[in-house]
Length: 377
Ligand code: G6P
Image 1 (cartoon, rainbow, N blue to C red):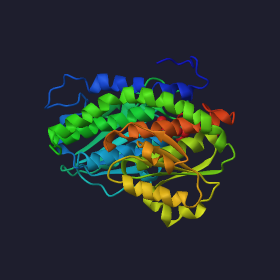
Image 2 (cartoon, rainbow, N blue to C red):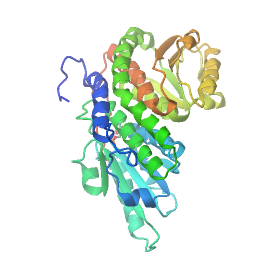
Image 3 (tube, rainbow, N blue to C red):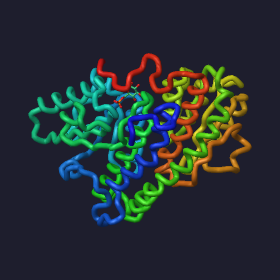
Image 4 (tube, rainbow, N blue to C red):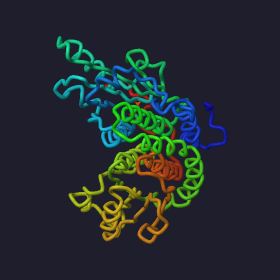
C-alpha cells in the first residue's frame, strides 16, 4: 500500500482499487489454507470471550456502524449470538440496562472517533463499578490504527490491516471491518458448534474467492459508473434499497453518495418503501436496489417493481442478467452465497458515488464539512 495517488485521479479511487489486496492480506493472515478443522480461523480472540459471552453490543459511527450492522447480522444469523448495534453518540446518553456476560465491540477506522471512545470508556466505568461477581465483561476493538487510543485502551484489538486510507469516505477500511466480523462469526459459530463444520468450511472457501471476484468487479463497474455518472449530475435525491444482510449496504451506499457528491440519499430496508418513502418517488428520484439471491431476493425484486411503477429510474445491483429488463442500469455481481454478498455489493455503490462526485468536479478526497477522524463530540 502506498500513500501516494500513483496514477489515480483521487485517493478514493485508488483505495477502491486496493480492496482485492486488503481482502487477500486479510485471508493470508487469518484464513490460510492449512488451518486445523477445530480452529478454522487464526483470529486472536481470548478463550474467555468465546466461552463466557452471551450477547454482543457494537458501538460505532458512520461507515463503521454499517460494518457493525453487517457483523450483527452474521453474528446472530450465522453464529447464533444475540447482537445489537448502537450509534456510539446515542449509547453514551441512553445505554441499555447492564447485562452480564456481554462483549462490547467498538468499531473505528481511525481509532480516535470521540463519540465511540467516550461510549466505550463510559461502558467500562459502568461495568467496573458493579460489584457483582457474575458480571463478566469484555471489550474488543476493530480498527485500522492499532497505534490509536483504541489500540492503547481496549483489552483486545483486531487490526484490520487495510493500509493507510487517505480519502475521507471510507472504502477499503469498510471492507476490512466487515471481514473482521466474518472472522468473529466463524470463531463464534465453530466454538459454539452452532453450524456444521461443512457450513463453516463453505463460508471460509467463499471468503477465499473474494479477492479475485473483487478484482474483476472493480474493473467492470469502474467503466460502467463512469459511463452513467453524467445522468445523475442534476439529481437531488436518491433512494437505496436493500434487505437482510444487504440493508446496511443500502445505508452505506446512501452515506457514500451524501458524503462526496452532496446528493441527498437515504437507505431503507426495501419492505419499508411502501410505508412512506414511496411518496417521494417519480422520474426525478432514482432508486438503487440491491437484489441478490437469498432469503429476501423475490421480496426485493417486488419492492423494486413498486418503485419502477412510479417512474423511478431503477439501478440494480444483482447477480442476474435476466433481471436486466427491470433495471435501467444493472451492476452485476457474481453468483455468490448471500452470506458473503455484502463484500461485493458495496463495490458498485462506492464507484457510483465516486464517479458522480468526480464528474461534478468535487473534492472527492476532502469533502466539505467532513474530517477523516472526528475527535470532538
Ligand atoms: C467521520 C467520517 C465518516 C466515518 C466516521 C467514523 O464522520 O466522515 O466517514 O465513517 O467518522 O470514523 P471512524 O474512524 O470511527 O471509523
